[in-house]
Image (cartoon, rainbow, N blue to C red; front, top):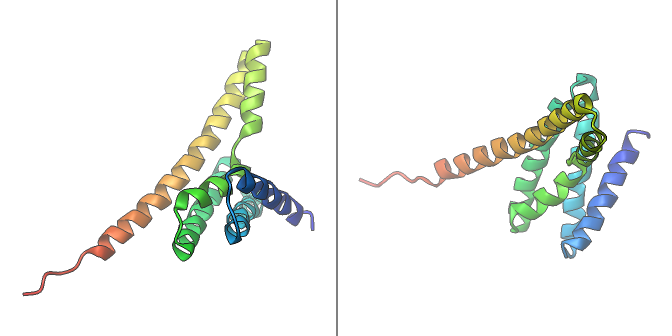
Length: 148
């Protein structure tokens, strides 16, 4: 049960941001579900002992989910992706990096800052990979052979 509570919290946080972004109806549930799924995948991959890889793979799953659900509901992918990625954003790492910087602790600032940058890069790379593959797949599927 302990593994499911953080997913529920991620879902609730995503619902709150759906209200901020003025989403209505069933989109609130499905976009928030993406955030919960992403956090579940992150927790499921915890035996990897490498949180940057966990963030990357969770982002790949979130982006796939967002692409599929956006096509089912005929809405832009951006709404699904923004809401679902919110639990993954390394806000704590950014905060602590700045705290160490202000305190003058250069070693911890660099360590925390580089780790946070790695997480942010993993998020961006996961989105880029899946979005590019989906666009490539659609571009190849749209080609029609000329009739002779």
